[in-house]
Every structure is written in C-alpha cells, then in structure tokens.
Image (tube, rainbow, N blue to C red; front, side, top):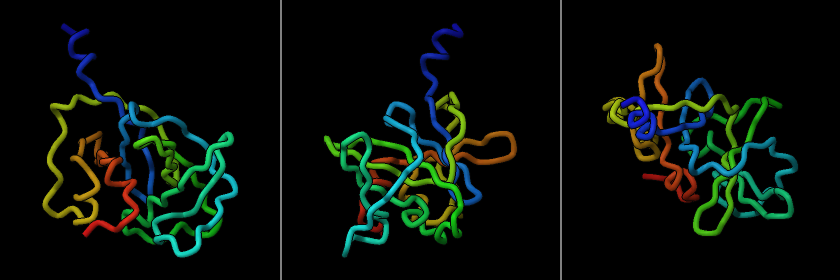
Length: 150
C-alpha cells in the first residue's frame, strides 16, 4: 500500500519570494540556475525582467516579485531562476531562492484562504500546511502570463 501512496504524491520544488514559501511542480521545472546578464527589454511590461541567454537559447525572464505584486528585490539581494517551458517557449521565473523538493499528498492541499491577496489567489492552485508555515502552490501557466492578473 505504501507504494501506491508514494505514486500519488506530487513533487514541488520550493521557491522563496520575500518571506513566503511557494511551490512549483517539479514535472514543470527544466532548470534551476543563477541568472546572469539579464538584458532589459524596452517597452516590455514591468513583470518582464528581460532576456537572458541560457546555453544558446534566448529566455524570457519573469520577475516573481513583480508578478506577485511584492516590493522589488533590495539592492544586490541574491536571486535564482527556475526554467520552465511552455508552448515551445522557454521562460525563467526569477525568485529570491530555491529550496528542497517536497513530496506532498494532493489530498492535503487546501483551497486558498479567503484572506489571501486576490493576485495570489489567481496565481495559485491552493496551499499546503507545513510545520507552522504555508506553501503556496503556484499555477505556473498563470505566473508566466506577462499581463497583470485582475
């Protein structure tokens, strides 16, 4: 029976943005890397941090803080990138940090709390309660849309 349970678990790579913990399904993540030399794109929406070159491939960098309506990254604070492919296009989601991979039972995901910020509700599929903190499960399709959610 434990083999059947483990097959039903969802794997999330944990992402830190500000003081919050988010999760992206591992099956969607192609790379985790240190983003170097992001080139700004004139007239692009603020959520687009710019373009970067990843092993010869041009990648659109999406700033998670901006997408989530959070204040900008202070000064030279560390950042990481999570590479995601969608419709044959490659994106990187710029976050403050990347943590461990967690295996979570989909039966334990809860609906977004009613007091969760509206933008966050639109960008997530629910929350998991973990030892005194919440992991917000991101909807990567919505996160990668460059237009603001309203």
